[in-house]
Structures are given as C-alpha cells and as structure tokens.
Image (cartoon, rainbow over all chains, first blue to last red; front, side, top):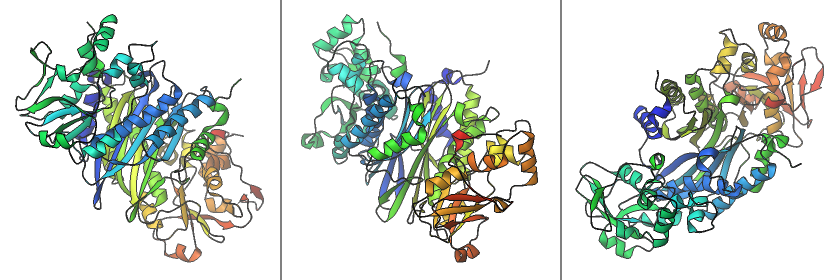
Length: 307
Length: 307
C-alpha cells in the first residue's frame, strides 16, 4: 500500500518542493533581486469545486482569482506591476459565463490598479483559474521579522467569510465577505513603513500564526479584542457552530496580519484592530473573554470542526 | 440555444481577453518596462488529459511544464529569471508520482538555468500544471518585425513530435521529441543580436506563420528545405497519415521560428535550417518538391486531418 498525496496534505507537499529547491524563500511570495529593487511574484490556483461556493457568480470567481494573488503582494508591501491569467473551462460552459468571469478579472485588475498583461486559455472538466501577480518593492515586508513586545494587529474583522460560507440565503456582511473578499493592497503599501512584519490571512488566523512563528517567540491573542459581535455568536449558535472555530480556523479573510511597535502604531494611518502581542512564551495562546488562557491549536482550513 | 465556449475555440477566447484589456501585448509573452530593462512574463497551463500522452512519465510531465513556458522566454530572447509552479493533483495520486513530477520540474529548471522561486499545490480531478516563467531583456525579440527579403529559418527539425504522438511502441527520435521536447533558450539569447523577429513553434509551423503575418507581407516556404526524411515519409504512410499535415499542422516542436537578413545569417553561431523567405505576396505558400506552389492553410493543432 503506497502513500497517496491525500495522506500527506497540501502543506507537506509544498514543504517537499521547498526542501528540494535552493531558490524558494518561504515567505508569502518569491523575492527576486532586480537591479536596485525587488521583483515580487506569486501564483495561486483556484479550483471551482474547492474554492467557489455554489452561489458564487461567474463575475466573483474572476474577481477572487485576482484577489487571492494580489493579497500576497499586499502582504509583502509590494506595488502591483502586472497580472497573468491562465484559465481552463469546461467545453459546455456558456460563452456569456466566460465573459462574466473575464469581466470579474478585469474589474478586479482595475480596482487593484494591476494591469492584466498576459494569459492562456484551456479546456478542463471544471473551471480552473491560475493567476500570477507581479509586484515591485525596495523593502519587502517579511512575515517573521517581529520583535518581542510588538503588538499584533489586523486590518479588519476576521471570521466573516467563514460564517458566510455556512449561510446561503441571506445577503449580509458575512455572505459578501465569502463571495467577494478584497485584498488590502493600499494598506500593505502603507504598512511597509510602519510594520515590523506582515502576512495575509487565508487559512485562518491560527494557521497563519503557526506559519510565522519562530523558536523562542510566542503570541498572545485576546478574545475581547477580536470584537466578535453578538450577532455573529448567535448566528453561529443557530447553525450549531463554534464561533471561535469559525473566527480562528477557517480563513478566507484576506485581511493583513501585522506586527508593529506601540510607538509606530500611534502614527499608523490605516484602519486596524490590535488583537494581541508578541511574547517570549514560545507558544501561541488565546485569553478567552472569561479570563482563561488556552493554547490555540494548529487547525486550518482543512480541519474545521463543529461542536 | 446559447453559445458555448467550445463553439468559439481557444484562440477566439484569448482574442476576447486581449480586446478587453488595454495592457496585453499580443506577442509571445508580456513585456513590462522596468527601469532600464524589460520584464518578460508568460504563463501556460497543461492539462493531463490534453497535453500529456498516455505513455508520458510523471518526470516528463514536470519537465514539459517548464519547457512550454521557457520556450516563450526563448522566443523573446529573454534571460531566465525565475519559474513559479502551481500544480493540482488528484487525491489518490501516489506520493511517489508527485515526487517524480517535481523531480522533472527541478531537473528542467536546472537544465534551463531558471530557478524555481515559488509555487502552490491544490487538488483537482486530474493533474494540472500551471507554470509562470519570468525573464529579462534589454531588447525583446518580437514576432512580427521582419522585412521583405529576410530569410525564414528554424532552429531544428519540425514535425518530429507530431509523428511521435502517433507511434506508441518505439523508442526513437519522434517519440523522444513528443515526450521530452526542449526549449531553445540559449539559441533565443543569441538570436537577439542577429534575428529580425522570432517566435516558438507550438501549434505547428502553419499556425505560427498565420500568427506572425502582417498585411502586405507573405511567406514562401520550400518543401525541399524542410528536409523531411524518407524514414519520416514512410512511417507517416505506414500509419495512413499525410506527412505534410504532420510537419505543418500539429506542432509541439518548441523550435524557434525566426527571420534574418542573408548577411546576418552568415555570422549566426547556432544550428539552424533556412526554410523560406519573407515576400510581399500577402499570402502564405509552400513550394512543393515537385515544383507546384500551394497555399498553406491556417490549420493548427485542433484541426489535424489525416488522409
């Protein structure tokens, strides 16, 4: 009985690739020195059956394909340079649906000010969109260059999309975030001069904290600072879901998670929410609203558990 | 009855994207001015059921995914800068098979001296590999900047892979070319200083000639200069195939098709074969071995017809 890729999981497959390549920087994107600046490049592939909820419009599929890639540029504090689109379509897809996907892509490119510069079309059994985003920056914002005592902050509320995926008949902020998330490209550019580190939240806050953790450092997150609304908690309960699991372990937020000194935070000219601090505990913990402290588990997108 | 994408075909879908985007240069790759140089970027997606013959090894799948993208860099005369790999795998794929694909990718990256700088893994119903190749050049080699009187040449024999796809139980130069084609990256770099134009042959010589044709210009190709061997002709006949269709209308050659002045050709330090010349006829023609001249039809990969 030989091992299958599903026995290993995606993160391990990526680790295998990184271990065998001398040139991969394990940060949010690739960084390539180019004369006096740095070329930032990243690629992400979206598979219809995995990444597009049933009720997602063709327009929003195209929009999201750009968002997920531009979000990685934002996490590096990069200025957008160009976007390439490789798309595979089922042969019986309506031409109008294809045009809607492209409209979503072009709309997003315009919104993020990233020109669509290249592409490729193909045929497959479902819609598959692979995007590559290119950017430049003199000063790439890495994901693990924080200091003990730094504050941990996010650029917006998290957990909204996670709840949105569970609701299918309402039009509300949760559904909106699930169907049309946005990358924080402007915030990333500003954070370049203020933050000590940054990454984007795609697989859930918990997963990202484990991605950025270094030996000898720890993170303490405070539930009361997450600002989870009563409406959120009661909707979660209504659907028999654990609200903390939704907020921490699902993802698709595309908010930036960054660290910053207290002094620099005072001058930061973007919306943000402080949610915790960097410690020397060597563990990742959550102080609950009731005062108890518990370990945050390394559960991401694939391991969401409902109670 | 609404139109489906299969009614339109891939080239039309690409034309739709180009028509709606202000930033796409319709050449082999995207060209983005970057300080004093040009960033060259291209992406190509390979779908298992469409691009990988039954008898292709996992190693060669990985190798080809790099080749098809590096070939576009070669066509622009670009120096390789980096390669990004987005790959989707069926969940029951053996881990060893995944490792062989990666080995093929890394082997190709090493062969073409293009570092693997980033990637993404995913799950889909078949193997899908989307690669992005990045390069730089001060002087991009465009595909349609030829002059009347230029000679037309190729960097190697064409039609080999087309025949190889029809043969499944021999180990010969045709099978080799079908299963492990190589990009002409070194030749592309040299051609930068000699050729007036260049492109790579992926959908067949005929298809590429139509891609590069401008109003007021024509191409005359000479069958005797194509150098089709007797062995090739008899193998084609054995399988009831038209050898000229195989050579002109199938592709997967990855040789460079370039134009050059007679004077510059004398000094060109790479292997090449002159196959014709640029005229003012405004048509694309072939002079057969028997002296007759016929129009070359615009049939590419999807329209291969056997006699």
